[in-house]
Image (tube, rainbow, N blue to C red; front, side, top):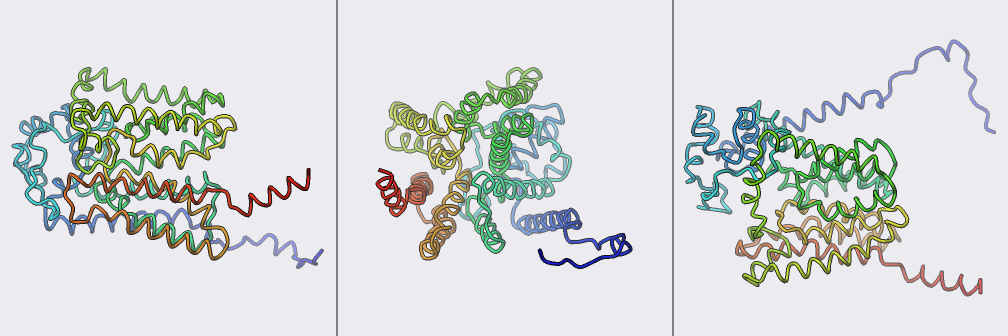
Length: 446
């Protein structure tokens, strides 16, 4: 044993100087304030060219919807509510052209496009979402968007941390910084931050719930997080089937009860207050006929190329894929593992009835899974895989910037899940050397 340095009782009683660990909460708060300031300045620069309300999703789905429910109105009838509650603030931030349905896009990539003239409202989420995000309505639209962007940024960090924990992947410090830069540089990530979307909070809540379930901790919180994921119910419907059967097989009844109770409150209380909201909501989201506007889904392809027969082919293909997923999941249900979750995200995304281009941030989990497996092998192979994965995350998502017709963009959008599925299969395919070693060992034992 190495001799240690002797200390006197007086030296032992002297308090040690504070280290950087004690400053972490302060540094975290300063970092969040810095991000919020950057978000506000970015939005302020955009405000010099056009109204933020006309080009940001959250201004409709969070800020205005929150204003309406706080005022006792119906967010699915936003234009009618604005007519009777018009103020100078709305004249400045929204403009009366929105109420008449004649507003046009100010984004150069969509010149002259009329902003949903056929709709009574642009709020397309369940009613409880308006209540949950109503605190954002207490501030101006610019501050609401800056705060939502900050929430998305925090959710992205949580999602990456939970994904790495779920994959048992601990990158080296220098690679941690690079991975974060790559994740933030992913075009769908930038789109979510730009629009103030709910996809990143849903991804973070889902992965955090899975981590808690796997570690058998805080079942009530895991159930609450799963219930909150129903903001984007079309995205998480298929992963929910996997998680639900997993919970039943592993007898995690506390999580199921917490999720059911929270979902009952979120969906039930608004129904008691406004019994007819579901009848208003379903036609707005057009569940009877999936749209094809920037929809990277298989259903949009059926609608585009098969006309009135889209639902026949879509139902057959979706049923076959779902049966294949049930077969693929059986090993995890039996062993209590989560190894099939990354590939489930890849397959489930095109199977959803409708989604948007920025919803493809769900592909970050399988992308990190590819990095954690293939990019940590031998030096030469790992370097090549890193290059491939970097090119995939930075260049391929830029398909939406290509000069192609808008009604063909869903076809290009399917490139992301399709190519990532190939990369995921290649990354997780057993190495030939490992197979050979197993054969030799088996022969030796024989």
